[in-house]
Image 1 (cartoon, one colour):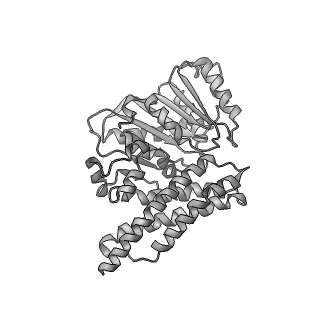
Image 2 (tube, rainbow, N blue to C red):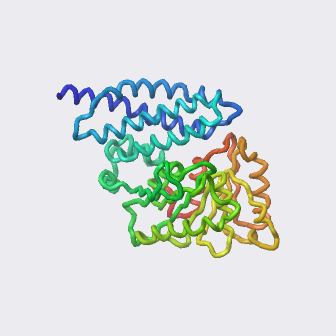
Image 3 (cartoon, rainbow, N blue to C red):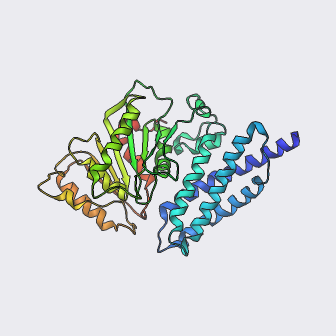
Amino acid sequence: MSQDIEHLGEVITAAVPALLTALEGMDAAQQGYHPARPAATINFIAPFTESLNQAHALLAPLTFPEPVAKFGNHLKTSFLYATRTCENLNAAADDSMAFLRASRTFSKALDQLFPLATLLNPIHQFFLETPLRTSASVPEHFLSEASHCPIIHIENAYDQRGGASVYIPHWVDPNALTPVVIALHGGAGHGRDMLWSWLREARSRGFVLIAPTSSQDTWQLNQPEQELPALLALLQFVKDQIQIDPTKILLSGLSDGATLTLQLGLQPGTPFTHLAPFSGTLDPALVNPALGLLHQDKPIYLVHGSDDWMFPVAIGQMTAEVLGARNPNLIYNEIEGLGHTFARTALKQLLPWFSAACALEQ
């Protein structure tokens, strides 16, 4: 038995770094993916796929003893979804939907891995931003995550719509004013996927993260006011548990979520203090002079990729020009080489812009 446990430990020690490295590679591959150049993504992911498959082949046949069976199930399932993500990315050359499937399986790999973040230090470090990964041990305030996961899924399983996933850092003072980020997914997306685009930063910097899921395949962009009550209810759900800073409520979104961000964020009387649309379009109705919605000085951080194939960069530039002509508090960040995907790299500058409390402590 001791030899079996020793062998299991050796395999885990070798397999986990391969998994984490591959997940980092997948994240980068999704940022650089373009449907006109799928071979570039396939070539990029190839070495990660090979090492991941080798590690998975060693881990999959092993049996975890009962005391660590739950740990083993999470780890094996994370490996399974990670390998499926590589398969989906490799299939993108012949299947236009494969990239979307890769985003979902990537999310599920992270979803299975996160509960292990306080049990293995490399996994803990993976869910932190790079400058915070040098600690040789898990900081004490993270340890309770092993028994109390800080992610709350409100009727938000992957096959459900209309719910939300909420991350409240368990170590923040419930009586202190805490910033809130609301992250809206794109068309055909899901809040449980969008959660992982921001969670590393929320965990590192200590802000509340709300990731809602639209009730339909996408947001009601023809009737955006219909989406507001659910967002307000989610804010109230958080307020019932901790104090939030009413001057630091960021509404952000990707693609259709970016369009909704501007639609709701520029309406008078909404609680959103800062807006951060990623790779979206400007609703023509917002430009209607009779509405006067663009004559607000609400801070806006607009992000668009130079290689966006869904909404070409000219749309982002036009949006920046229209908004900037009326709003002195607009920042436009055009990211070279970015396709139609969430630009996580922008968060390094965006979060301190949003709130000094979200500056990264090193």
